[in-house]
Image 1 (cartoon, one colour):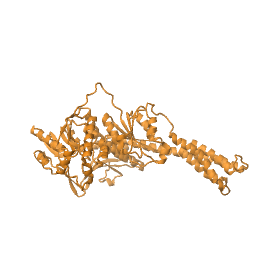
Image 2 (cartoon, helix red, strand yellow):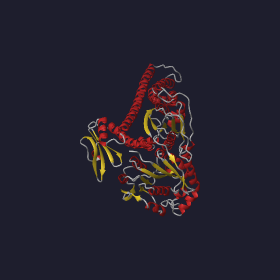
Image 3 (cartoon, one colour):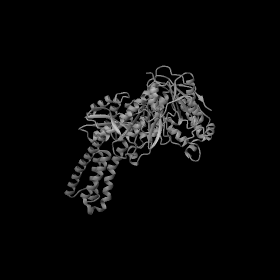
Length: 620
């Protein structure tokens, strides 16, 4: 079936007249004999809009109960059953009430388009995902709803509904625009939003976005020849970085370049100076909303891992969020952004400062070859470890020397083991051996007769120093091995999680039957039973399953995870362990996101099949 055509009325500011333009277009098409229905419109009681809508067939809303209140949402099933030629759907960025089949209205619209129904819809510029932070800087109001730019770029027609800010303010004062949030002292945030200067800045922002995406009144001429496919835009999701600003900036660059978006989170396996940040599932969900793919790698040198990952992905752009890390992380790694610039190959690098990505440093091309095989630890951390191995034993022995009569040589050597362990943790076996050597020399200098010399007169002291040297070396090697095992374990866990995500991406085709999906999951993870349960009122029913027996409630399953609103994936197996449960949790989260990404990739694929036509329209 041929995909329906999408027509968007893009408003510069709220109250510009988008809904009026949409209804007027529906009235025009109906007069020409086209089968048009109002699938959903938000008139907010405005008489002019009510009159326009009254002349068209309206599909009743689907009522959904949430927290004791009934809400009216787009009834996609009824519209599909009615199957008009054109459906009018207001407010594309709207978030559906919990309990709806889909989270966003643009996802409902996509289903109508896939069914061959043309859709005319409305959207405000502040709800474009790539402009989210710029709008917040202009208005001081944080938007909670947005539409991925890839969705807008698939539109067959985008009409810019312009309006002078003074006219919008007059409409607002008369209750003809945004009456649900009037600009009065009861709504201070909206009062600040509806400022003439801010409304004009939004208008200029919309015009600039249209121009950047070649959606303005004068379309750009197509380039001759066949251009090579652009490399993906890689966005680094380092711990503590301003993830939202960085991802939005990267998504905007990817949309401009018509390139894939890939997000990579580097899991620091050193265990030193780790910063708190967003969890993997939050980062995956954020990337999925922008149509991006999530990856995760592990390593002790974050900058080096970023450079290697970008090289493996053949990335054309790397976007990094620069931020202030903990003191331990700054000492061990230095500036991750600056070090990445030194290691990266011929790739454009964008550094995004916190809360100010519009002023980001921009593209820095570095012609040095990409990093290959280098030391496992960052140079700065190795330097600190060597300094620590030299300074700490000497300082410790000097500090304990006034109490030599009480603790003796043996007590001092036991304390010196602290320096050996610290050096081993920071720099490995080499630093530990150096710390052992300096501990022996310092103990001899401060604690053996004659004092403050490197001579030893008593055989027992010589034996104590030799034994300490052997014990210190052994402890240093053991600590080094244990630290390496911990790093390998963390890396293996990251690789296992990534494998689960890749498996989810391969089995989560958008139109795959649920029974086939359950069978593949059971075979992939060697489980006894896999099923998908759907809520039916107060009960649960089995939509599809493989193996058995299947539980009749998620709480009765060994493993359960929601993969869609009202749908839960349940699994059971005799050999399920805690590690398996963790891996299945990662898989289930990625499965949910993979099916959502697959839906969005269908939208993006339409960009290459047909061009975007524009038609500026003024509503003044």
